[in-house]
Each structure stands twice: as C-alpha cells, then as structure tokens.
Length: 255
Image: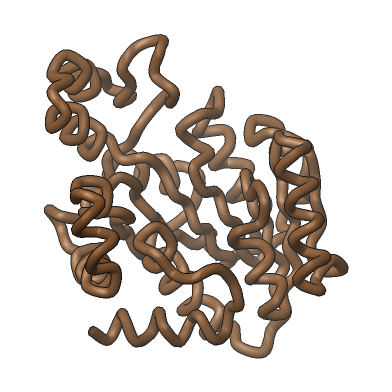
C-alpha cells in the first residue's frame, strides 16, 4: 500500500497521463531518484522516447530532456506535445537510432538516461548500453526497460502457440525466428549482466505488467485500482517479477 500512495503522489509532481500498470512502477522508481535530487535541474537523455510520454512530464517537473528517436513523425508529435504543455524550451528532439547513440550525445553530459523498449530491436545492445553509460555523469542514473523472455513464452503457450513458445524458450536471445517483431528478449539476470558489463551498478529490478497481459479485459478494465495495487505489490518480488511482460532495471554509473 505504501508504494501505491507514493505513486499517487507522483501524479501530482509529474503532470502527465493517468498512471496505469504500464507506467506506475517506472514512475515510482523515477520519482524516488528525483526526490533524492530535489531542487536540482537535471539533464535527462531519453533514448527511443518517441512522442514524449516520459520526456514531457519530466520537463514539466523542471528538468531538461533530450529525446533521441529514429522516427521523425514521433519527434514531430513530441514537439507539439511539448508546446501544448508549455515546456518547448526544455525539450530537445534529436533524430537518430539507438545504435548511433555514441555519435549523437556528449560523454558525461546527462544526470539520467532513459532507455525504454530499445535494446530489443537494436543491432548491438552491448554497444548501446555502453553509450548510455558513457553519456552519464559519474553517479548518474539509468532507467532501462526491456521485454521479458519468460512472459513471451507463457503468453504464447496460453494462446495455444506451443511451437512458438518452445522456440522462445530455447533461443538464447529469446526470439522466435525471422518473423519475430523483436530481435531479443531478456531474463532479469541477462539484462543486469549487460548493464554491469558497461560499468553500471544495478540497484533495483522490477517487473512491469506482471499480470496485466494475462487477464481478461473484463477483469483489468473492471478493477483498475485493484490491478494497479497488485502490480505494484508484485513488481519487485520473484518469481512474479520475472514473469512480467517487461523488466525495469534502475542502475547507476560507478563514480
């Protein structure tokens, strides 16, 4: 219940869309970092930040955010969103993909980096994570969100696609062949090892959408508050954490 209260407080400090099981766990972790740095204007790098679901609320909270994204349409939507929110002067859009990140940002220029749903699709996730770490000041924080392998196996099996579930479980990268929309999926240990190898110390690991994708719409739509509270209660607790559709890792660059 304490976590839920904290997240509800986040809504007041970070004006943005209503909190959902897809965002509440992440915002609760980010809020704790912002509270730790209370009073500071942070420089934030949001890789793959798209239309600004995180960037604009962070800018509204008084921080400066650079969004790197490969889609010009997404960046145009980001710019409109920032203008509408009155924070256009705090949001900077840069077109480019994750694999080119090292050439797009200055080393040690960010207090916080966000990298959400990017490592699943880039050519070289280790190089991207190394660029993320290099972009941080020593002691700076990284918020990394990746697709979970176990959830993909469970989800395919529950819908009767046992052959695909078997492929996902057997593949070291957690992919199901050339038609898969993602190049890879992660276990919590694999994702943590990737960050650690780049010089980041993983401080927290949470599951995002532990139950949400498994429930009938009638349940999730009919009991949204109860679902949100249960997601928050299970997010940091193995084995439920490791079955989440996405895994959220919060790490820090070694000083």
